[in-house]
Length: 420
Figure 1 (cartoon, rainbow, N blue to C red):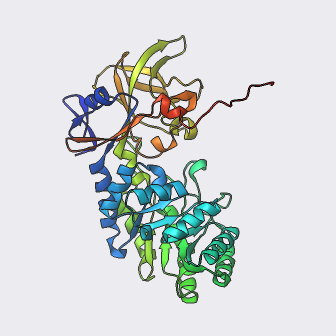
Figure 2: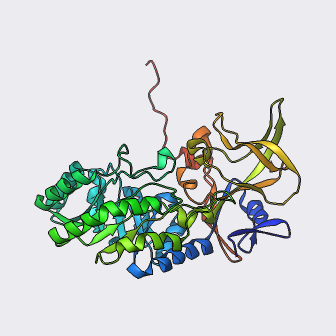
Figure 3: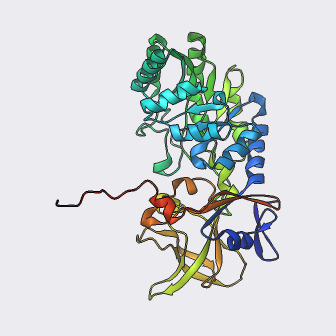
């Protein structure tokens, strides 16, 4: 059964009518299907079983504790990119030895925290970062395991803001510099060379970029494995795409595995994968209520209570999300779906054929389970939405709606008066 589907003309999340969730918990509201997350995990693990992969969930895609725990219980480790994400993973019960730490700008405090927790390894993005991890590990009397992130200069054919494996991107080091970086790491105290990491970007809809990158990286892995006795990991990153439109056909786990496995067999390395949206993207929707229908001489505007501060992907990436009515109707209109934030960029869809909804009706913004709530803000002093998780006919609220008082917490007005 699909995570979200229509029964008798009404949208359901697994076995729960979405309208009931909106009535009980209000809107805007994120709704997640736990079953879909688990099924996606097992589909990928099964497709890649020949190399017994270490699967690390890209926690940046959805950092709700319930999502983290769901994937951890299924067998996943975590790919984190900040001290806060590491803290979340540990609070959700993820063992430190199943956590890898990426990101180009790790602070000293974050490195200290990760070393204290004894994470599996750091994904290192520069020589300066190697030096910092070495200094902190040596000072603390511990070992920092490191995997150099290489930038193989491969175009993943995705949005320029989500491409990470091309030469002009800020991530990783080129293949020549990687050789020198390993030589530096081998000489520095407090470090252990754990392996090599790459990540091309997201969402990637074809296995071709992975193949192109692995053709470049595999020979280096063989060379460095022979040179450095502790070199035992190859992390091929994430980025596996999902269908945002009904006619899209992203690569299946089977197609992905068929393409990459020939380059992984025989390496005798632990293979890591770091999917994010593949697990959570189509496991979530953002439910919103129509506030007004507004016509002008040029187009029709469907004004909803969800905004760019709730889901940033459409204005940031010009991303497409299907928008479906909670109660189906054959009637159609043409126009924009926009939010209440005071920005012209505050839209969910533009120049789109839409269901003919009226004031008070409910809509579902589909494929919102990845890079949705995690990118939400309090712009216009708007509280962030509640989040609920569904499994079968069971419902749990996994994050309370943010209140006005929540948003003011920690602020204060100075006791002194201006000009005195």
